[in-house]
Image (tube, rainbow, N blue to C red; front, side):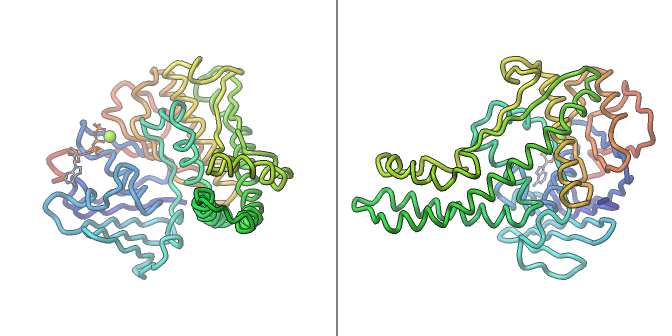
Length: 349
Ligand SMILES: Nc1ncnc2c1ncn2[C@@H]1O[C@H](COP(=O)(O)OP(=O)(O)OP(=O)(O)O)[C@@H](O)[C@H]1O
Ligand SMILES: [Mg+2]
């Protein structure tokens, strides 16, 4: 998958902006506030149909304008997102796409942003969110199972709060939940198995040091035990008035050479582990969909020393399109061709 061009109209700080991308390595440089992250964000909006920086689509419209347009031409289609103050419309090759799910993930972009480092210290629910977003983009069975499970979970929690509990209904809900839990856990297991295959070698390439990075999936139970666990949890659920067992409590933890990342790794190491995680994610998507996602790296270089920066830039796989932002590239020795996109604040507005 490749992005050939991006055209922004009244998007964030841009009045009109046209960018042509190199199929391999692109480096966007510009001062703080010049609009580097806004460019990556607009690509994520095409990928996910929403921004990761705001829940209000209207924030994406340039101050004073009525609507914003993102027009992205890939190697196969032309994607357009038109954002109005109250709603947004999605188009593929100028045909209106009514169902958001038919648009999400068509452009699969994997973003690294500085705040991703919070992944290690965040709550399990935030960590699950990232997992769900990534799996939902590539697996229809996952997104469907998750939506159905979450809706049953709501029903079940409501039921458990009732004074006179309808046990028959509770059994019916548990019965319907079981196959969905198996699908969710199975897909999460496969996901972590694949990521674990890739993450250490990628980390070693970036850091130049041997290390064993492992992500441990803390799952609600083994797939074969789901029915039994649901039954075991029944009395407990009734006692506590909420659902105590299920994949909505799942989590995952990172370790380096057997040590917990938070307690052991340095800032730079954490950053490299996350970068390795994102590249491993890219390999996972590639394996599942036979398409290579686009990798967006926002401000990735700032906390790495010169050698790690250079190693990172030089190990980017040749089959991958990468867009990196940084304030400048003055001291970095990049031993491969790349396209430099320089943003000048005054030209954008
Ligand atoms: N809706 C909007 N209308 C006009 N300007 C906006 C809007 N939303 C954000 N901006 C402006 O966009 C500018 C660029 O933001 P962006 O985050 O892309 O900068 P950046 O180049 O990534 O900077 P940094 O190097 O600090 O990360 C900011 O100065 C912000 O004020
Ligand atoms: Mg930025």
